[in-house]
Length: 210
Ligand code: URA
Image 1 (tube, helix red, strand yellow):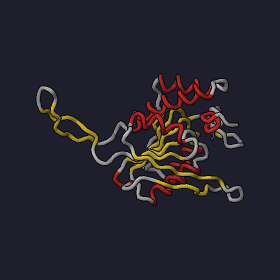
Image 2: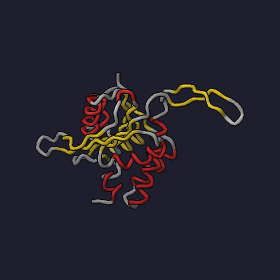
Image 3: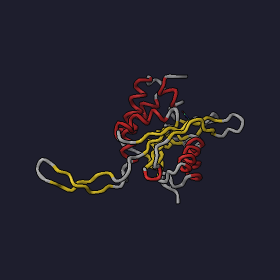
Image 4: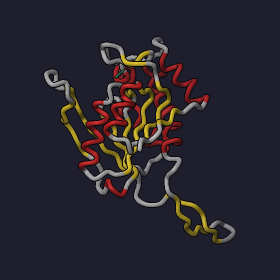
């Protein structure tokens, strides 16, 4: 079983993404756009959340009304670029519980190594939304999800701005149960591991570093 990739074709998502790809888009605008696009992607990624009916007293009478069922979702940012997506998602789901996974790449083994891990309790009972703008090789996303599954997460979705086919294949091989929601599936990775055509280094563009 491989979960399909949801490439969100909504005109607002696509237009905002095109502005973000432009190398001349300045940092404050880039940051504003990633916030706006993350809200639209969050809308998609939460579409299938289970609902339950509960009574509500309107000014006129009591009625049975739909509410989201169960514990609050867990929103997990893969540091540091994930934080750029996190803020917008939190605007839309302010009650989400937030966690962080920090990974760096060991220059000898080229494997991701964990340097920070702090996540909400009861992960197994929460929809776990993992955010990182770029699904490039897929190595950090897979490593982060390995850690989250060890911590008890069972229902996991991954949100990114851009996904490379290589990253999607890596994720689907390791975690075929994890749905990927992305604004675009781009062409490929270049030799330096950047997504092409891409938007450059997402962290640098969000935080104005080089
Ligand atoms: N990380 C980025 O920030 N950009 C890419 O293109 C690939 C990985």
